[in-house]
Amino acid sequence: MAWSWRYEGVDGESVDGPAESFGSQADAESWIGQSWRELAASGVTSVALLEDDRVEYRMSLLPVAE
Image (cartoon, rainbow, N blue to C red; front, side, top):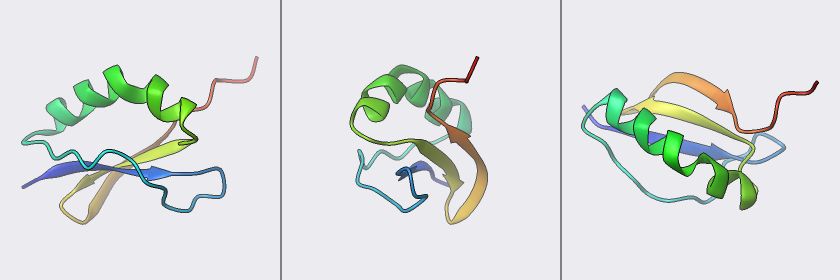
């Protein structure tokens, strides 16, 4: 099973991002923890963690409103 991230823009549409593939969910989550700032700066507003074609979960990269 391969894990990867799908990158989404402000309208929820898929946007281009690094084509990374990971052997485990933990590896994918570790990578996004190190890369999310650069992704957000390039216009990615949310990501979806995929196991093959199945969405495990979605996560916003936008700051939490205070």
